[in-house]
Each structure stands twice: as C-alpha cells, then as structure tokens.
Image 1 (cartoon, helix red, strand yellow):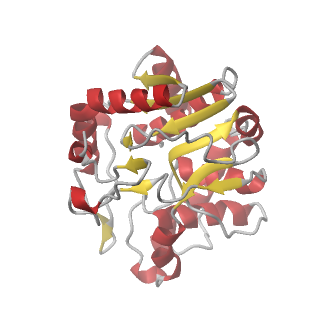
Image 2: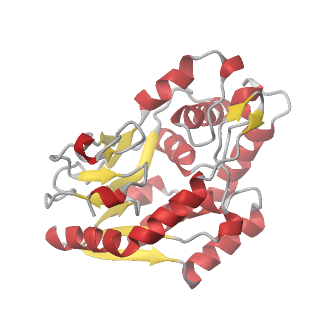
Image 3: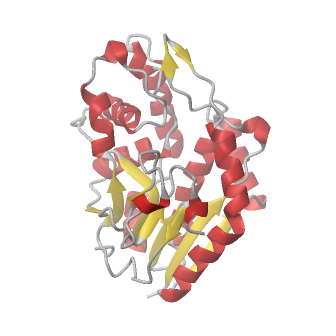
Amino acid sequence: MKKVVFSIFIDIPEERLDNPGWYENGEQIVTNKSYNTKMALLNSAPALKAKQEAYATAIGADYELFEYDDRYQTFFDLVANNFPEISEYDIVNFYKHRVMRDLADSYDLVCYLDFDVVPNSTEDIFDNHKVEDHFAVAHTNRAASHGKFMDANSYSYCIRNPASKYWNTHALLMEEGYDPQNDVFNTGIMVASSNTLKKLDYFGDFNTMIDKMTAVKHEEFSLYHPNIQRVFNYDNETMFSYLIKTRDIKIDYMTPMWHFVVDETRKTVDMLDPNAHMYHFINKKMEWIL
C-alpha cells in the first residue's frame, strides 16, 4: 500500500494573525499567542521538517511538506473572498483537510501531522491503528469537561478551548435535529485510509457548512447563552466532529502514547514520557527535544 505522511507550514503574515484571547468582564483579552506561535515554528522549521521526514522514511512512507505557495494562495483566496469573517489561522486548518482529501486520490493511507508534532518513534502509525475502516484521531473530551458543566454566566474561555468547540458542535447538531452530544477532537494528528477520507468528504458541502456555522454564530434568538455563542467560530475541529457524527464515520481513538500533548501543564522536558511515539507541542517548546 502507498503511504504518505504530510504536514503544513504556512507562515501567516503578521498583520493577518488573529487574537485567540479569553474574556474578562465581557471583553476579549488581547494576547500575543499567535505571534509567539509564528516565531516558534519559524525558528524550529528545519529541525521539525527533518524529524517528520525521518519518521516517514523509517515507516516506508513518502513525506510531503506543504508551504505558502500558489496552491495555498488559491485556496486562501477562495475561502477569504467568499467568507471574509474566517481568520487565516482557521483557513490554514481547513487547508490541511483539503490536502488530506487530495492525497487520498494518490495514496492508500494518509497521515497528517501538525508542524508542531515531533515523532519520537520508528513504530508505524498505520500498523498501530485500524485505518482501513476507521479514522484514527485523539479526543480532548476531558479538557472540555469543565466548560461543559460550568455556569454559563461565568463562561470566559477562548474560541480555541475544547469546551467552546464542544458547544459549537452541539449547536450545529441541535440545529439539524441530531443528538447534540459530541466528541471534541484534536486534529493535530490524523490517520485514515483513502476510502475513509472519501466517505468523510470534508469539502463536499463546505460552503453549506460555513453557512450553518454562520447561522448558529449570529442567530438572534439563540438557545445558547451569549457567553457561549460569542465563542462559536469557524473551527476545523468543530466541523470535523459534526461530519464524523452525521456521516457515521467510525473512530479509532488514539492513545496518549500516540498523541502525547505537551501543553502548559508540562513545565520541563522531564515531564515528557520518553515512551510516547508522538509529541504534540501545544506549548511550542519543541526546542526541548530538537
């Protein structure tokens, strides 16, 4: 079987960076998170590419890195011109699904790694997951749990918090008459077969999906508290969760050893599990092991 591992590195121009800040007293806090992410990826880019490419070679897969080129510019223009409310950060994250689906036309098995994912193994990710008829991806349901049950009057999380994505997906499913309970996924690592990617058909109804997201985001008489509705966003993981449920895609949930999240709770390199196969550096401290 033909296998490919790919990633995306889009250096977003500084003037087009978004603000993913949380809320205090109803006002969104301005953060430098997007700029810090931009610089961390730029500084580590050669080493990150080398690590990911070496992993692909070790498991007998091709490796491709998609960067800011004509292909991306065409995709960006198409989305930005039709939906100017969508940030470039979100466009980049939709782009990874576009590329993943396109690669399904040339490869039997496709693995996506965010550019802040550092492999720490030579074990084959395809052999360790049920990718023939499942989509392998990790969930972040535990991270979303607090925001699911807290008093909505106190809800102050940002648009990228897993709980915000849970409520956004909840609203989309509710609007269409589905059971609104849903998984919150982390699409930083995704593995699927060509057949599964074609069944998911992420971009089959893309414009309609964006219209649905716009509707729940701006609905005048929303079922959702204003503190929750204001964080509805054009998020790839929200759309992914909705499609997984409505298109009845079976999930092989990745274990923490295959999607080891390195976030702000891990203060030093000593807090990394040396047995993990993939480190996902949410905190962008890739220099710990590069």
